[in-house]
Image (cartoon, rainbow, N blue to C red):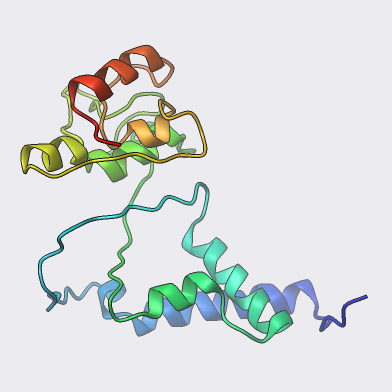
Length: 182
């Protein structure tokens, strides 16, 4: 049996909270100060979604791994690289304290908050232009890779508009109409 350090739940939660708070306080962007990035213009964009992973989840996982394995989490190592740019974004639903994947993906892919159950359509009924539509207009190649159905709400949030997240036939048609490359 592996030799694990034993700690109380309270000590674990306290340490995770301190770790999370220190990350926020150490990052000027998270304190409300905007710092211009002094990096060349991005040629490509890869948007990796780990469904259900919040900063709290990342902080808890980092704290656990440091305490039990005495090494940092791979995500933290990636985010610490100088060539990796990362940001935080508000992805809550417009109409509910509990956000579904359609609303969260629409916030990422369309840049606007929407009601649960719809993809890139504002509460007033306006169609938000998804980021992949904008990329295609800029002559960029676009692709979606997913471990879920490709017409599921999360990938659809980057390219489609749908009154209902369950209208996967219409989402598939939009992928073809909008010239999805991969």
